Image 1: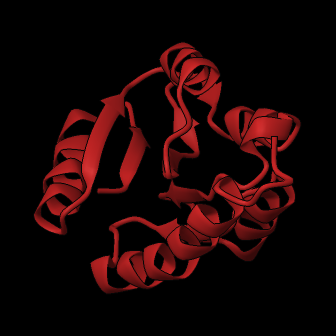
Image 2: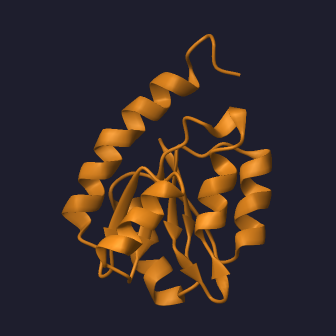
Length: 132
């Protein structure tokens, strides 16, 4: 069962994402701060991260940038979830190293499409013999 790390500081949004993911058959761990997300990713490798771009005063994209600098996490799909839907916002998300940018309110069909796209690739890369 794939494990998804949800990084979202808005409790109703977090609950909605977690409930939907669990109903889709995923194991879910939810955190609401960047420090919790960094700590989790240092000790565990989830199958994907759903990342809120704006976590209170913090920039959630700092987690995506950090993930892309960690050799053991290079394969990790990071799907950004944001209330900011401007083209420049989308570009900033992708430049930070996210695999996809999903606008709020979340289109769950689109989220499922991205999970279906990125999770199989993540699993193949995570278990490849030359990945450390």
